[in-house]
Length: 215
Ligand SMILES: [Zn+2]
Image (cartoon, rainbow, N blue to C red; front, side):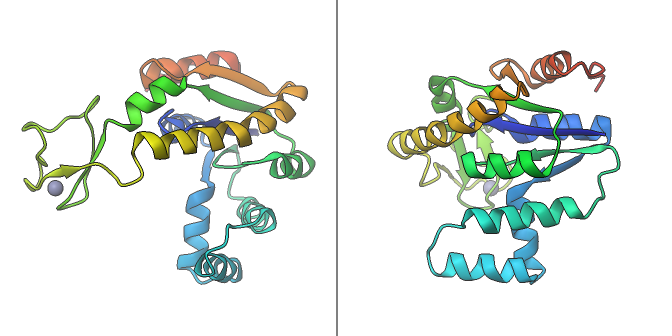
């Protein structure tokens, strides 16, 4: 049984790394954002609370987040373990998590802010079909036009320098104390998230004493 937490800023490839690890080791990849959506879509009691909170324009509180995580982990569909992504987001949630589950490791994907900026500001969205592009990795055949439908590519409203600076500041303010709590328990492995995803995956495994990634 292996239980991991993965932490990383937007653009660090957190979802990709979690999926690669989960698929190969038969872990359940728990993306907390997806669990929220699942509860809302399936009209559960927790989903109703989430919907009411959001309709009132309020932030989803720690108790509700913990409720969703607790319920998701109570499903016990994780025979070989899990990797959780998108949680904990603050000190309180980290304390709750440590009290409730004995974890094996925390993977911290480290990406300098300058690289986050480069990656995030290269994102484009098709104004026609909604397909995602990243000008660094998969630019369209014809500049500024969607390969699939030919509509023009646009930048997401919240992918501006200013908005990103705010998100980065918030991320560090919240994540540093969480990392501090996990570091005191000696759970954290920090991996440089700049190289290609296979290289990052190998490094994660090396640091966690896991078998190498074979694709
Ligand atoms: Zn399109």
